Length: 353
Length: 269
Image (cartoon, rainbow over all chains, first blue to last red; front, side):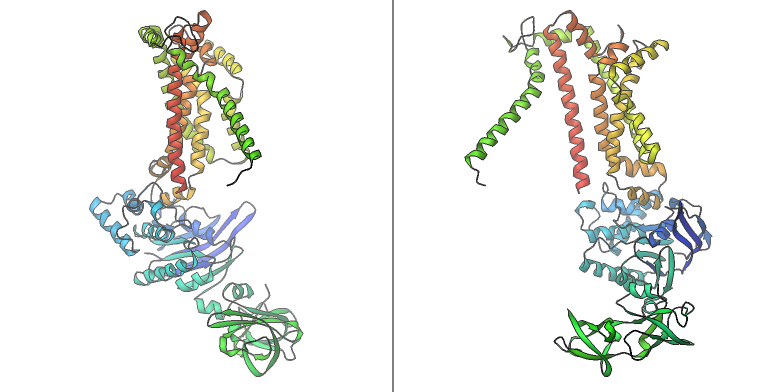
């Protein structure tokens, strides 16, 4: 187990920049997720760490050792692929044993370690099975066992749950999290699924167009997004467009068309991108919107039943649409008028990107 | 399902025509088999009396046996050469892209596209200047030219079915290039290599045009001998030789088909 550090690592494919110079440090035993849409550069970082891609610039360190020039086989990195990439002509046992056989581990030791790895992922008794006899979830666990059995310095995972159905995905997310808490391994995980990122990670790095736009623990990203992109990517967002009216320290206000009063809130991100008189966005999470007797008069135009919650689409004066999420009993059962409000503390002013 | 009288008539017509086409394709070939079991001194269809007589003649004649052995020797060498070179070529071609790939592929299918007689004349001229006419080496090299594209294309198909991430996974687990090839790539493309090997064997075993130009009195393949024999007289021993070739070719085809089924079964899983 070692720390991982990227120093100004960049990747170009001809004229196309897949990754702008990027710094990233993952502490020993930390589970860090790269979260972003496809083409945001997250898989590029992963492949550079694995050694499958050579960076165009920058250095890569594992445990303080520069591994930039090392081929994949000399890096001692465990990788779990999106489609698992299990060897179809080998049994479960031989798949897991592969990395140990390559390392010429003695037979008795090899058997013990393979069986430990299989029991770690709860596949005891599956050693003799053929890969094609396994379900998707079981294959995913074999891939994980194969990656961790070599005691890698770093564990890399490339959207390993994307092929599983929703129910199984949730189970495996928790299982991966439990495995990680029981025995922390330095892990770099790639996904485009925000829920996956929030459930499993110690920290999340949100990526966009070849850059890390924000990095932090899940609650930080959700409550204090650096920009509208991060806000949209994590959770549901109401983003109201307006013009910055005043800025004062960490606070400010937007004038929003149709609103009698300026919309006050906390300045998000670095704040440097906001300027009086310029366009900006106000972020209000749907769960922050609540019925309030002296609030803004709104019209309910849609109700979506979500089990214990309902999502309600509201039209505010001036035609602005926002979503509100409440417990089912808190909003009128039929389409009606409603007065709503929110705490100014739960409004975040963000640059428009 | 219910079918009207018109539909049934159409179906009979369809089956009838399909049957006729099948007969057109297969009958002339199969006709050679009974001809080989004919007791008389000339080829007769159907045979007037059934007999193994000409099989005895074939195997008693050292010169016939010699040509069969030569054919098998040449085909075996070609099979090994074409399989090894074809596999290497397929792996190399898989790594190319763009114009280079197109050019290399064109070079590889060249010998198959060029009219065989042109190739024969060219090879004869080459072999003469190197003093190779009438040698086993000349036949092996010439047949390998024809067989190599089939072997390379067949392995190429197998290779495309292999997920390249398997090789990445193996190297990530610490395996060097040769170990990755031996433990992952090779087992997965083996059916393709076997299929290509059978194609190579059959290509060489069948080949007659190049062989006529390059064979000599001492080194002569079975098809060349059949060709020479027919020009003098048409005895049932030719039918025996042809039947032997037919059986070997069918056996080779069956092996290739089995290898293909195994490969498909594996990739489908």
